[in-house]
Picture 1 (cartoon, rainbow, N blue to C red):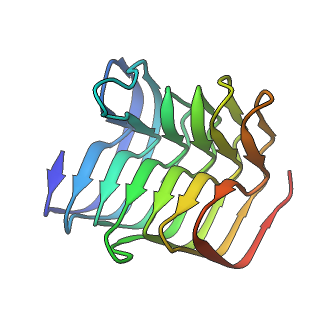
Picture 2 (picture 1 turned 60 degrees about the vertical axis):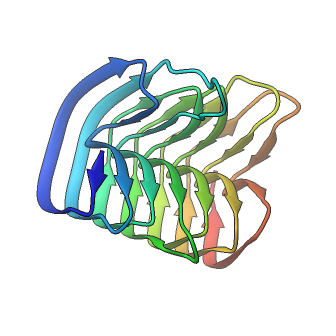
Length: 196
């Protein structure tokens, strides 16, 4: 877990498997004012943690959970597997008053989850995404989630600009499924597209 730390020019490779609340190829969680710049991960991430007691897991190719923090010039290329809030780059990004920013980022690895999965981000809430793309396939096996080529769930006045997704998206009946976003509850999109 990172709390108010600035990292730059860092790379992670390899694989990790575990039972983690927050699991990431480089960082498990970023909290309140942390910054990651010029970083990337080529890590296969497999998180078997299941939701319990009101705590939802988050699993990402680079970072599992981002709270009120910044990721700049970053990418992830490994495959990511988890239960809920699973993303090729970030599992879950949550910001107060758009305090999360993901800028110049991308993910190319495939994403597999039970529910809430995205090629770039599993869940995006109160966040700003600028200049981003995802090319990996996204697959969910559950029947009541949100699954998208770029993001599974977008809410809380999030903003996405200059972004696209090209990976195939698949999930069983009962899910919200979209080439770009699985479920949009509150947010704005500018110059975005899906080609999957």
